[in-house]
Structure formats: C-alpha cells, structure tokens
Length: 338
Image (cartoon, rainbow, N blue to C red):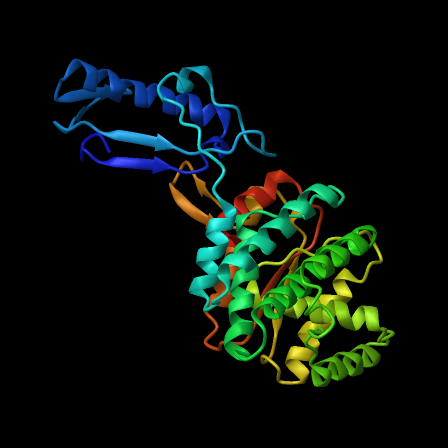
C-alpha cells in the first residue's frame, strides 16, 4: 500500500491472532514514521521500500466483544484514530427495500415490521440463535418480494405478514411461540386468519412416504421440520440445525436429501458428513507449509473442490456435524455470508 500510494480497509481486524497484530503494529508504525518524516523510503524488518509521495492510508473495522475476537494491542491502538458508528435507521432501510421489492404501501408496512422486530428483541427469551438484525431483515424482505411477484393481487400487509410468520416460525422456541404469534396477530389483525401458511401437499406427501420407507414415523411435526429446512435453504446457502440429542436433526436433512433425489424435486442430492471436532482447524481448512510455501488442502477445502468440479447442477451439501465453537466456525464467516 505504501509503495503504491493506495488506501486499504482491513475488515474484522480483531479476528487476527494477538501475535500477528503486534507484528502489524511494528510494520505500520515504520510506514507512518516515514510519512511524518516526509522521506521517499521506509525501512521495514531491515529492508528499504519505496514510499509513494502521496503516502498511504489504512482503515480497520472491528466488532468488539464478540466470541473468538482479540483485544487490539495498545501499540496498535495508538496508530489508529477511533471512529464510532451509529446504529442505522432500520425503519428507513426497511421502507426502501420494500419499495425496491415492489410494495406500494412501504411506509406503513415498514413501521409495523420495525415495531415487530423491536418488540421481539425485548420480549422473547434470549436465545443464541435469535437474530433480529439487518441480515435477518434482508432475508425476510427478499422472501416478501418473491411472494409479491407471485401473487400481485393479494393484500400487501398479508404477504409481508406471511413472510415474517413462515420464515421465523422454524427458529422460535416453544416457550416464545405464544408471544410471537400474539404480536403478529396484534399488528396484522385484518389479514392474520385470511393468509394461512402456503402448503405444498404433494411435497408433504412425498416427505411422509420417504419417512415411512426409512422406518420413521411421519408425524406432522417431523414433516413440518423437513418443509422448514427446504424453505430456509431457498433463501440461505447455509443453515444451522440446533437442538439437543434425539431431536431428529440428522433425520431431517437425510429425509430432505432422499425426497429431493427420489421425487426429482431438485435432482440427485449428494452430501458429505464431516465431524469438525475430530480434527484440528488446519486439517479441516488446509494450511500453508512454511518450509516449502506450498498449500496443503484440508478435508473441507478438498471436499468443496471435489464437489465444485462435478459437471452437474444437482444439490451438493457439506454437513459439518459437531459442537459449535468459535475456534473452527469463525473461519466459515465469509463462506456463510450472503
């Protein structure tokens, strides 16, 4: 950056290890010292480099207080000027995105949407998997837009209410269900009963048939779990199944894979089941051999590469089956982001 006179922004900077950060502070300080001294070269780790006459700029962004993040060393903090950012106006963002999706009554709908998410944040129990932030809002709005284009004659309030209800229900724990449904009913009393959940009876029948073949009980609860998983996979390319042992997490995705394959719904579904806790993060993701500077593929990266090289467009899943901890899941952040 210094030699090119460029600006750089380093995102999620405090996810780096503390020892890497301390080396960074020494390197960046040598650049800043050269800029202050107005010289045309700077020395870093015993080597002289050219400094562009315009100097350079580095910006860092970080979320403090998250799991798996490090505190910035004091030597690094003094090199950067802190800038605090405000919480964005969610309601205005919702209104604009609703307009972009084709909703004409975006103003009143955004007010209701914002009120619902604010109340859910305050009134529901604090669960680790609940997210009432901007990313969750965006995915609901994308679904609401799909509903609007599919059924342009339906009342807009009803379409948004259906998107909010159907795509949040799978993640609401049982104790919070009464509060959640009560809030939706209070905000959309006119359309609550007239907009039932959209059901695909043919698909549900197929799920029940596949479950029976696998010697499982095709209860309504189980069939609904499989339908919920398919709905979530339509809007996300990465889904978490959370629950204690014996909560039919594994059987849900196995059944969906069989349904997609058997019924020709999406085509032959291939999957690889990996336990990330059985191996080290290096063995999972791959690493650079420091002696030879060669990249050695890990289990996850080689599986992903192998699946990507298959010529068909059928669904391919990688199941990471094991306990979550910041150690290994943190590196999946950019892969999982939409």
